Picture 1 (cartoon, one colour):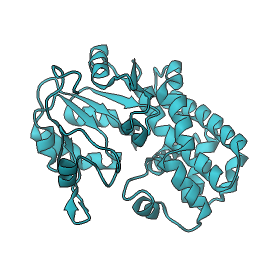
Picture 2 (cartoon, rainbow, N blue to C red):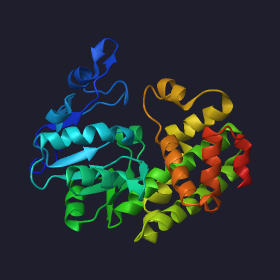
Picture 3 (tube, one colour):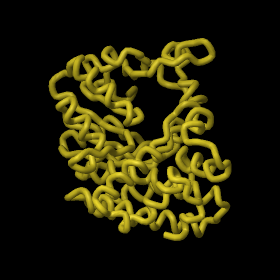
Length: 318
């Protein structure tokens, strides 16, 4: 922002779900100490990033809305944003990794946002572990868009010498990769919990990539092969299967039998939500309804281990 004062507003408002941390409101901590001590401790935020607990106030006058919340919360948020009213030509960018499902089939988060707010919504996905990005470690990300004008504009906003952004005209492919890799990461975590080595995890990753591609082609037209080789694809799949909350909690799920996903969200993740488990449920519902279970043996095995009590060792039977 400091390098492009003609592009950015002097103040960047960030909506924060208000919580109390050690007797203080989280928004007040962020605005006074410039640190999100609950969800990104140890990293200072720029002083011009202002936490706002009122959603309508946070989005008022915004030209660009960046969505980065658990996707199950959108249902309550979007009507409030719509009620606030948006400036003409406002556009959205979704960083949310998840999918939904209705009678018509697979529903993407970006489509939910576009329909609810009547705005164009691009997606930004990639091998971007939050603490590494905050530390300034070099990484790449993939911006999927429908409109190259919006793509070029958003690339200018996000791209730095430490955060490289590549634009592709395949928003559906980019978004699906971001969602589905979290399901595969659960499988990688089950692998770790069983004590299996790198060979087994590599097999899970390979099989997972195959099913990710198959799912994309099965339910969407126009998916580009090259998208799977962008940061949002194989790169994000690899980093998520070796790190990240979904892999970590899946490992603990196997090691400590009886622990629930909700308990791990509350304790291990300090209240953050797992997107892999939610997406695994939605993926299973979709492939079950379309009579496609035999086409996705890995996704099915992951779901049954996570939610139906199947033994984790059945993962390698796929």
